[in-house]
Image 1 (cartoon, rainbow, N blue to C red):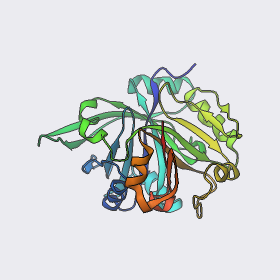
Image 2: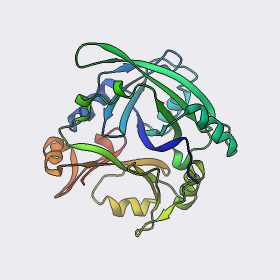
Image 3: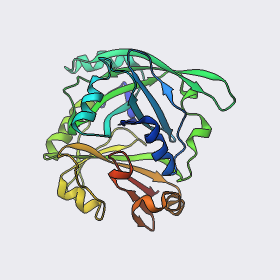
Length: 286
């Protein structure tokens, strides 16, 4: 049965080398990007968030080398910028650790941390979280996974930050490139106790929860068929590669993305990895 302590995809983490440049780039694609938030000293990272309806995108950069951010630094050295990990929405971090151990996984955590948040009215508040982490070696498709329990959701999902010029409002799916998609999909399925489903084009989908984004595992040929015309040079053989978002108005998305678009269709806009920090960004009208 599905895990009791998670309710679906919460956010994806995109590692960037230059956090300010990453924020500028995503703002130029029509996103409202939050002010920079500094994590605790032990984490040695800072972030910008792009808040959607029930999920979000997190841009993370390293500001000081620490043991906790070593995996992120190794990812940048090995893969370059891109989606380095994904978080599920956790309901109880303590229960999550216990549940993973019951299932035979050496869970890490819970970890408590926070970051200051500048509110639109000028107040500064704190966003606080509790996380638990699957073992670092459990990386289906090269993607680390963890769960995030939001203790102060009101300081994260700020209404002004959820409105975007490109009209994006949810994560539809994360596409995972793998030389063996069936093996990688089965791996992800074991981590969250979900069975992969084979799609018409041969890709495999692992649902994460009702109304939440899916993981879709595919090989290089299937990726190319799904995204004809999108430059794919330099993409590793195994990686999280596509971030597909749902928008309310594809024409508005196309207008704000402008010349940065690789593909513009009547109900869809696509941006190449070179323009989106190592990610194929798909904006499709729901």
